[in-house]
Length: 265
Image (tube, rainbow, N blue to C red):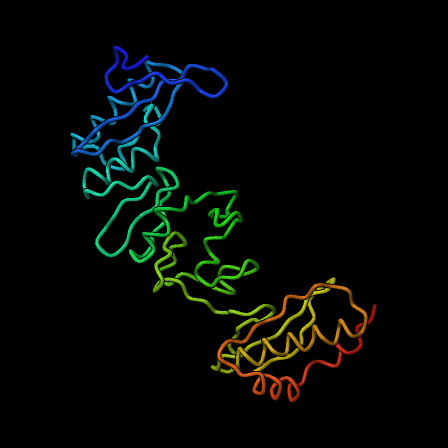
């Protein structure tokens, strides 16, 4: 069947033969799908709510109510289209130099406008405190997109300049420790770097003047432990902007804790 007595609602049939009701609306020449529902009255309610949102600027993001049938993600998309003239399927609201990606009515992530193309085509999902997107068949952490390692600890390895952990603008993300097993610390007013490797507990490899030295020290300690029979897949550090000869020179000269040599199977 075609159009029903409800405006903006159409019959459709799912693959298993179940009757479904699709709601859609046209605004400023753009046809927008609002979703499929198992009840015609609910689909009609979604259409009416969408029409109200698009025509009434009193509806803002914070006006959303859990009693509404219109899904929150679609609600955000409609408000952004109404206000900014750009329809984006994901729950994004545009500002001049940045945008908000709404995970819920209570939580919005802030990104630089340069990231709009990516997040308009990649849905952010949340599992506990873990934020990720599906990218080429695998899960990619949102933190990893900004150079934050999967093992990084907030406050130790990275922090947000304005203390807002929802603000992912590049200027707000401060990475303290880029390498595995490296910890930044202050000593007598100077920034130093400690290399630590974990077996059943943490072993201090040594303290170094540069982040790269500490990262190489970690690699060297891992090599020694493997040579001594420790069977563990240690994650090696890749040192950017360093030639193989420079790396080898530092690797040979670096001193590490004698305790590392003593660890055996």
